[in-house]
Image (cartoon, rainbow, N blue to C red; front, side, top):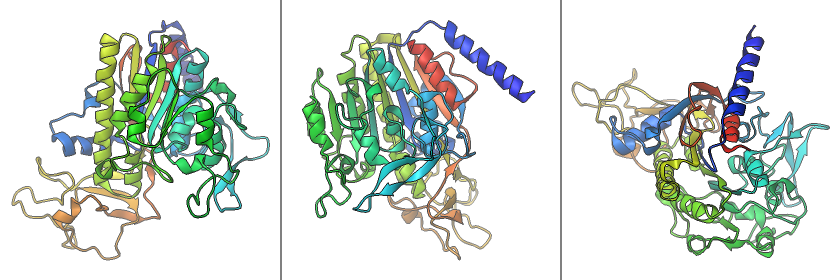
Length: 456
């Protein structure tokens, strides 16, 4: 009976998508990595107080998204983003590839995990919405605060069996080179993020995480006509009419917003530059923008950086919407979608008084004194279900320390690092073709609605 119902629901969705007239010439898809409901609530309080709203919370269309992958109740980022980009449930660790059983990438002679491997006769490549947009003549781009080869951006433009095969992912986006993903046509028009070591040759002293094959993919980009940038200044000088790749960190992800070095652009600046470069295409564009460091902070049970990067993500969304309203008044030809790939285990609890600082310890609402746990110790309002910080014997938590940039909240179960959460996430949408985004939806349905909105 349930299978029959699911079939009818899927058929109804496909029918409604088929009947909807294409409306969106442009799509901007914003992904807050790990930005679950508690993170949104805490970031709202952190920035605006309990009665405030983040910018994206003001968007008129909302939905609740189920996040499970093809084989796990609690998803990894790769299959969740792949579901958004392809409309297909994907196995854990797979990058936009169906029915693949991932095998850990083999290490090269330098000890770096390089070679992508699938189980024998496994894996079916499924087209991404970025590839479909490119095939229709649209300009396309991917912008992230993580490494450019990380799971979220990679799921827009590459197909591998394991997300850690970053060196294989990198070569898929360099036009004309060995291993290039030909579904990208003449290439992704705008690429920005961190992780330049995946694109540059190994050097024992200067680049120990570099490529074992000796290829300088940054030079290959330049040879293919790309403007190539390493700094914010390089990005700001890029001009429409030429493809652009900017990789702003030599050997890792980009910085947290609270610790951003001057040579790195903000996420807002990257989003606005991408729009400037892509929006000159009369056929329109598809752009993915990821706030990826939210996830990294949560894995480290570091709530302050997670909230600050959520606010930075929110600012990038508003900056992009404001710019698009100048280009496309009323967003009559532009669809904006904001969502997350999965939740985390962070909770807001302990009955903190209204008006309290969300990063502080909990105070007794009647007397204003620090509230104590059953063992007589203070505790923070934000805690994690699992993570590194779980002392055998709890000590008092100092209020000033708890609100510091590097403080890591305590966890209920000690693990190597905090895990994802398996709960639903929120989606917000506005603009052309946004009306069908409502109710509780499979993450795969988001792809089909975007595809229908753009007529791809």
